Image (cartoon, rainbow, N blue to C red; front, side, top):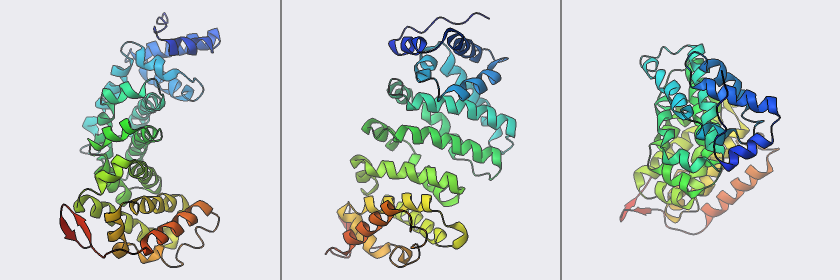
Length: 307
């Protein structure tokens, strides 16, 4: 099968220049094979292995005719196996390889804006809605979260503005409550990144309902992390950072004075955080923020609200 023509983009041309001839031809052949249903599965696996080593794979994928459509087709093909949950390991692995390539596109500065403009992340939300504990579904949720995580890592306002128009916050909150430790960690990281953006913080603290939902889930996570068998320094780090960022909002700070879990105020997590200086500093700063003078009620929508 003949290799496709090099996409007419400067980024793709640069990528071609930094690869040896055999490597370049191999990449082009695999990209070409994505558009053929009979060769797609092997091509997905091969390209997903190369996404870290080929720096400009994302523009090559995005600008090659039919490739993104093929990746989305792979995603939509497993929708019927979500409800009822009958997805098997082979199907999960195949679609996760497609998601890995979408994550590559989401991570690249030259394709990220177009990726968002095409609303590609919305195709993944059906996977985040799943609740089956079976490994194929957990793998699917985690890989989908990885795509969103790749977007928020950039700290770009356009990413946060896009996500706030979707249902990503309630989806992350549900996974934070019911998911595996790794899925909880990625979901909490996504929430943390949204909170660290000024628009994101204002959005969550705009109404009592939004704030209280976030605070309730974070509180449940702290109670769970206090159990010796469930302790995770990595997850706790993201939870504490979320609380600290919420305390930057005056109205949320007043509410946190009443609803912050006691386990963050006492010695519950001393052993867990003994080697994590940054999280200990965040926790100290959180306590300092909450001990500053202030009223005991928060005003949201003009109404005093108490937790």
